[in-house]
Image 1 (cartoon, helix red, strand yellow):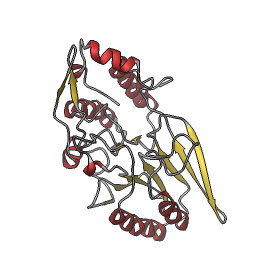
Image 2 (image 1 turned 90 degrees about the vertical axis):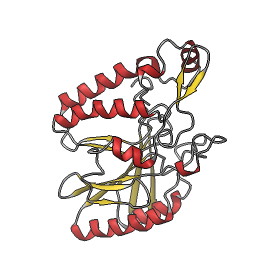
Image 3 (image 1 turned 30 degrees about the vertical axis):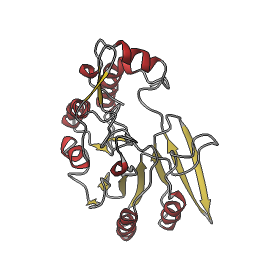
Image 4 (image 1 turned 180 degrees about the vertical axis):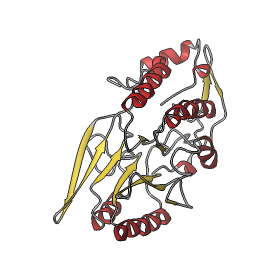
Length: 263
């Protein structure tokens, strides 16, 4: 949920708004992101750094560009970065610059613009790219493939509904996904999934607009190919859910937002 400092600097309106929100520490978001990326470089993870969507506050182009520039430092350190969009990131009609008492629209990004800004963050070097969405498959190692799934419905965004919160995987993307899973199977690779929206219901409150609409269809497909893990975000809560079919169990590991305490 990064936002460029220039979009909010000196705005009493934004200060009042974020203090009444869900705990995202937007007044320190640049410091939080910088400290986090320094820690990533210090740890130097083998596999890479994964972002499961909602990279920006409300899809402001300048916020995307600044974050991509920060991620360049991670990539320069030899750490691969993998990104997919969240429901806040693409075609967002809520992209604003916050003035003292009002908001002014700023430029947001299209799906192609998202790909251009984050060139080098996963999809450019992908094994497979979905022609119908921003989904792709990356190789973490010879035996581990990372499936980055675009679960957002940004094509339905409008002035009346600036950002559609719910998610689904398009039928064309499901067909592409099955082909990729079959190829991973014959190559003996373990498929790990990442999507912004949750694959399973994590509690009675966070279901509608949090779990992907066609989650049952997706889970059956993943069970067929013995997918062990699906990583998600969206609901800003740390939780692990699981679902079992016959002898196979799939885990949906939901992670909180970096902007939310305890960061």
